[in-house]
Length: 205
Image (tube, rainbow, N blue to C red; front, top):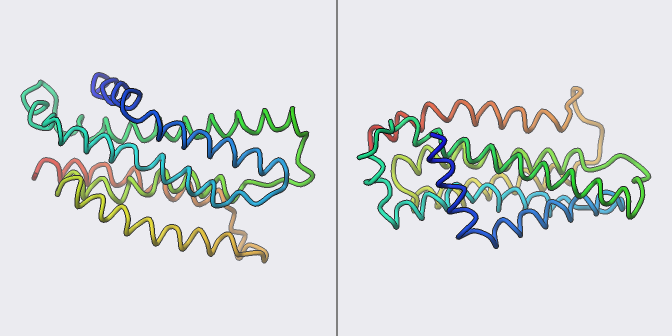
């Protein structure tokens, strides 16, 4: 599985530099805007979607190069093929967290600390998008192919964007003690639960 992840990282760096740069720039920009007490919610959502698209993009490259047929001839189980994409998604999420932390650190030095704590809701939504969209789209992509998975990716994106917009417009106190950090925790739970489903669907492909 490590070899598959390394292969994906090489392809990611070689063919997706623009997407990586855009996702990193938006995450850093979100942190800087938060430090200036400005609304950065949409930048969080855009960075999350670009990052969440990376596993789907790599699966499309695999299909175009017929790597799926090649990997079946290797001593690699279908489960490891699936887990490699989920592991790559987690690495992308860690990269987004690192970019956000670097942006906050740089903004704290250049601009100074924010007058009020901010960014919790937006940052939570960014992490939720990075985890939730692949959790919903990857099982369909492993079963029916990337093209149909992309359609579901767009469909899920519409619903998630609508929910993010509602959260951004919510200004009252959180009901029932709800905190924004519950969003990425719930997305992580769905992400973990979708992995066995993807394994089962990929074996049946």
